[in-house]
Image (tube, rainbow, N blue to C red; front, side, top):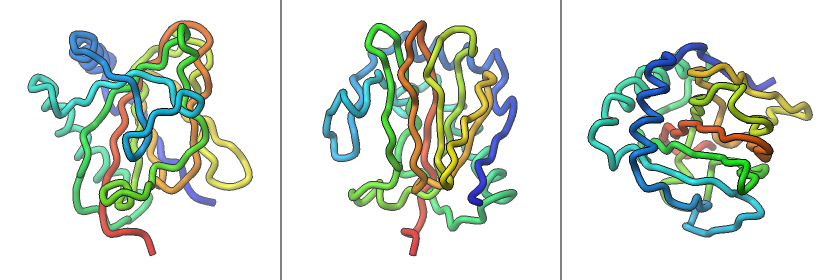
Length: 183
């Protein structure tokens, strides 16, 4: 079976608060799909890209360390870079925020090089209903840990989704590690 790797407390509660404070001060954009396509039947969320925010630079330093450790312990993928910015997504109940089943590898030059996906839970589980990150490594669905600050890692080619948020709001941080295309 393909492993879903989890790192509890990858970010402390105070660090999650700090990220959310930074993100809430920025103007969020409507989430799109690979290729800048928009389809609210597939994805309904608001995004803030962290590379555009100077006071969020420390987040990338942590991401690099977390991805290196997870890759070393679990995957051993040929990772060469982070070709895309980290994003913070807000899934709100007022829009039934969600992201239907998809994989993170796409047709574009950059998306086709995605190797490892990392998703960090920034919200308290009690702050929302629904909004579960589900990953399908085989014929069974695995629900990611919802503890605040936990980082979940999985190969970018795996199908996964965020179920609709039915109450409150869920925030998560996502980034992809890149390398030579899978063969």
